[in-house]
Picture 1 (cartoon, rainbow, N blue to C red):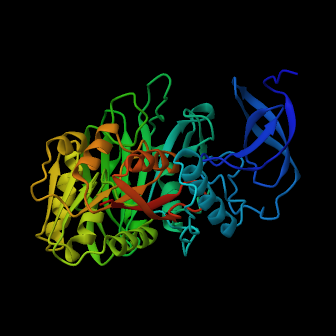
Picture 2 (cartoon, rainbow, N blue to C red):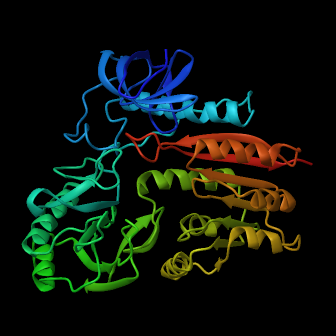
Picture 3 (cartoon, one colour):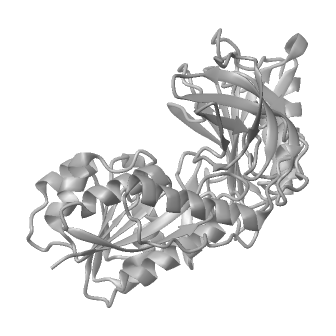
Length: 455
């Protein structure tokens, strides 16, 4: 019997996918089920039918998993952010560990490697230091401000409270909604490309308490700017910087081509691993700094630095890993394509009085292509985006063959693929891996892998 869109299926959920959906089978087809947990029997409605898999969404949980618990958030049914919030936290850790284990076994061919349990986050709630929110043109032109409805890039629900960020951040969202509504200007419409209010970004220094508010709008003058600044600074004394960003393009992103500082220095400071960092409106900074410290400590431990090594940090971003290793190495060189990130890294090095780090604005592929064996690094750290390493980068790493290569990954599938390519001809041997739970209540998991060059 052919499965049709809208049809309801009773299925047994066997495991979870890398996207956080339950994985089941029906008539030989794999069924990915939203809002379903391993070990459950659910009734699911088919949303999409492909040649070799089906996408569905849970309509009713017929037999709940023992680890299912009540969710804390009132937006669980509409928000796609915390898809695992109803899964007990220890079960989340086990599931993330299994995702890494399955990827390394099935995709990488590493069948004899046992993956340790993911490093736990001591605070599974209120851990994020940055959140982006969207404005939406609601009924009768009412301003809506919140997060995207699951599965809809052009639909936003009004946020009451998000338990991934601080209570102060939630209150700022509510106040900015009121200020935008009183401006008389409409929210931006993502399909018609008209309107003014686009995004709100709230950043918080978890160690310093400093906060930055970034108002992202379409082109035009920000109305009642003095009133907005006065209201936010009076009600939230920890708001030390307010920025207005103009995005006149069509891309639905919370960045733009022009920034104006409305209040304060335009940055906040935070502390990570004993180092101070300045964070601007558009800077990249680890969203969960408490777990980032554990991740960086693991990298430093596995790097086994004795003070004489040349370290190469690929995809260095704003320099957090490079700067955390600088005190243990002779010199660290960070390679990063985004020039603004390089400027941030250099500023943070000066802020901490670190003079043995240099940062190069370059494409990693091009840099490795021109790298020679002279003064070759003894340690290489690679922390690529979710797409993983380009084949040219893999070849460049194999050619350099640093004695120790540490790979930091946010995607188990591309991690497994790249590790297999690095080890396929015996250039490297995978020594150990360790997942780290950076984002509780989501299926995302970071992993550190250690590879040693073979003789």
